[in-house]
Image 1 (cartoon, rainbow, N blue to C red):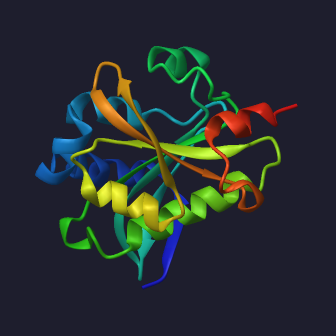
Image 2: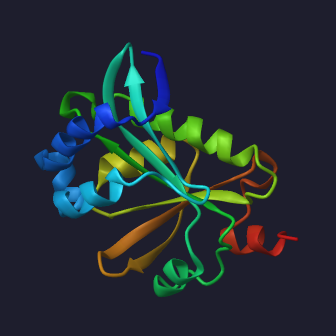
Length: 179
């Protein structure tokens, strides 16, 4: 299947609402109403969101944003620059989980983000009990960097992917290369 990303429109909001209420999504994403309210607002300040489609079928949602210094510091991620891009993903259609579609969407966003020379790396956070997300990011070239406390959501795995020439460097090494 070929994966494409397209801009979220108001027509997609009912489907996103349904995905957020699906058991497999709610378990990992939490409060569907709070998440829907946040996802209903248009993206701002270098953030974005896209519907994931494969063969014309809407399967999920991918989000990306620059985390704020406050968000990073609250999580104890002091060494990560705010110029990184943080990627989140939701495969809303249960029968599409584990088919490589999420990793293909992550790959598209990571490649686009890393084409900007101001972005030293891309990152993602996943709960340790979310093997589907951990596998999808690993398949898209992310590596486990460390565990951290994603306040107020608890322990998470920080996953990072650098530029091809810096794939073996850690986040701290990438941050030191920032101008």
